[in-house]
Amino acid sequence: MSTRTIDIHNHGYPKKFLEELRRGDGERYGLRIASDGKGEALLRPDGVFYQLQPKRVDYPAQLSQLATVGIDAIALSVLPYVNFIGCNEQTTVWACQRVNDGLAEVQRDYPKRIYGMGMVPLPFGRAAATELARAARELGLRGVQILSNINGRDLDDPEFLPFFERAEELQTLVLVHPDVRGGTGRLNKYYLQNLIGNPLETAIAVASLIFGGVLERFPKLKLVFAHGGGVAPSLIGRWRHGHANRPEPQLRFKGSVDEMFHRLYFDTVVYEPKVLRFLVDSMGGDRVLLGTDYSGDMSSWRQVPALQELDFLSGEQKQQILGGNAARLLGLESRSS
Image 1 (tube, rainbow, N blue to C red):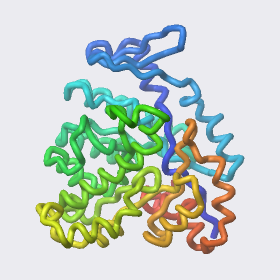
Image 2 (cartoon, helix red, strand yellow):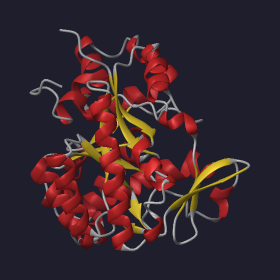
Image 3 (cartoon, helix red, strand yellow):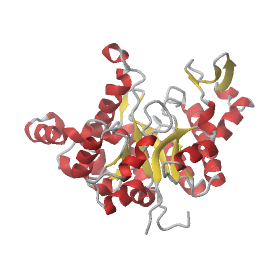
Image 4 (cartoon, rainbow, N blue to C red):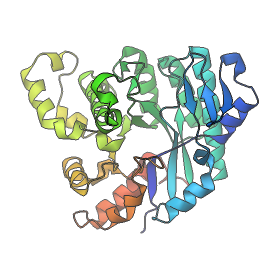
């Protein structure tokens, strides 16, 4: 049976949320949209602003373009640089609720084509757990996206445990996306914040969850890491050796590094067939999901037809990677959607 092709890593904005900000609904929280010669920007109360891209709310154009390479559906998450982690709890909760309401609307408007990946108000762990439950149970969102660190706090921070506990309980898929905007120094040249910083940052997130004991504590968590897990998969042997021979990695984790790695999922945004082959050989075809990072300068959506022709992937692995794994993790297999 043919499997629908599902892109697990695809960014945009919920149009409804932007419309609410244009009306001034967010002004009491210090959130607003302003316009200048460059277009619209979303302003946070702490002075941070995000330049908005109109194409990110043109869902029909996006779906039409992706259909030309055989992509049937997308899991839509907000662009990672648009976040509210520098705001107070009240503002962050309000913004995440409105974002999720907007994503739910998009999901309803484009059934079986767009699935919403919500936003939760981390670093406030209990509030994040509450909003995750609302997003999943009331809004029907299929997953959420979180950043690889929250204002410099790694994902093993005890404050975040209520969120991970609720994600495991609800079996909600969590997409972990790197965030290195605070990087300084040598990574500021040659676009290295992205070219090196993102893969490294993702590896730090994976390491924090493993060595911090989070994965051992919540064995049924469903976590997918952007950009093929960054450099983390290539470090399995080094981490295994270090964990066996150094006391520091054993402070909060006594289990198997390999076992923890094989609980994780990774997308295909690796750009190089040999790297994808390594990822599949190392993790298995049932642990890799199609991702495109559509539609920025680092997007790999045009590479999808080439992925479908790779001779080192079996027919079963192609079905798993192109959509089967995503359908299973998003809970689509047993539903009429």
